[in-house]
Image (cartoon, rainbow, N blue to C red; front, side):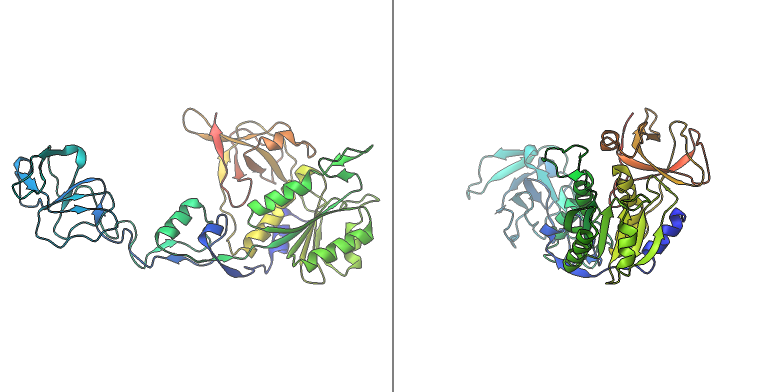
Length: 414
């Protein structure tokens, strides 16, 4: 058995970004930017009105509120600014500002007056006129050539709004790692299937499919393989034919008589990287490099052991393949005393809660057994305890992690 840090180093050693691909912004939510996005234009692209009202040439006119203004033209959004010699224009939100105009007065502060003899509309301003008010200046938000999104940014809807606003219709993202999932165990059956005597429903395959997608991977192959070695080999071959970069299995990696995965991998000529990690839960985890070049990680079959192995061993590898640096460490004080076992990297699920004084604390869920699904479904964060300590006292700083490496730890009110 090796230490947790050494296991991550062996698994991720030499791993680098798998590749890049172009992507339409509408298809890019959750994808990782491969290259920075540099603005090709100014945003806004021209000076424009921030609201409906009247654009004025007010500089040098301290008595602007007492004056009667004659409207030269009406400017709607999408129309070019007029090039006349007027001093006042009716203007709509987003419409381009005439070159001479230096303020916009809201329509609510405009008093309509009888039309001039020429038929032109006339108005009087109510309240102060402030030069520069209610104008969105060209480039006030973004300058041409400005880096607006760095490489490695995980694209969310707000980032895609920015990209679309800059007129960019193609961005370069990291290729998703392709992952296959093989669930061992003759006792597991699909949801919706009546349970036979001694059977259990397959909880880990749906979890892994969803969690892998949330972690930036692409699940390409999911299959239940029972306890038959030939079926396992056929499933691995099929996964490789689908282009899997990583094959994940659940179960059959410990030392029982049905734990066939280690010997099956040896028969395939795989290079074992480690088998057994000082990790709780999930000690029997196995990692290997298949002869064909893909990686293989065998996770224990208990649901929480599977989840821990995915989050703290597989996801660091996915980060490397996505071209991301190691995760940033985040620490919070432990809310209550917690029992642990020295020498093991203990991973617990729980919640982060903010008290009335605005202080965040890490709360470990009381039920941590690796077979229990309900407490885990209520967790909002992972909590890891120092491996060099046994019992950990309340107030001790502990590391907290998001449920996925692509999302920060979530907190809730106390």
